[in-house]
Length: 140
Image (cartoon, rainbow, N blue to C red):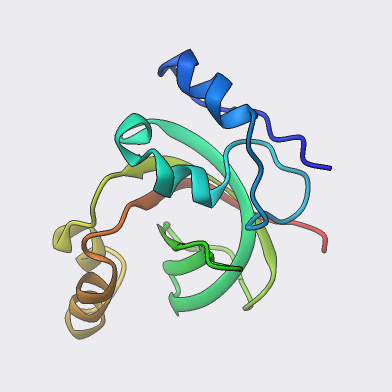
């Protein structure tokens, strides 16, 4: 049973109604916001908005960059954060952050050295990403 609820600061409530009618398998734990798939499906509406998603860590790129979601055909979502939390692959996390439509190289240079930043930008540059305000590991 999927019980997604919307956790956004401001934004269009019409989007909320549409999002609450669908569920995704790319979440982990009790959903407290939108799914990774929702962010990909409606990036324009979420751009600049604060959201909370719960999903499994799929790939750790650096101490301050990791990828969540991306299961069963869903696209993964890059997360950039300030660090300070130890993560492991396939561990469930809850991330609250600001959605950005596309990755800016300067944003990645803030979380990784230049060669890694360029590699991350090359891979995820045209995809939405989350600028994390809070990252929490979930029991799982």
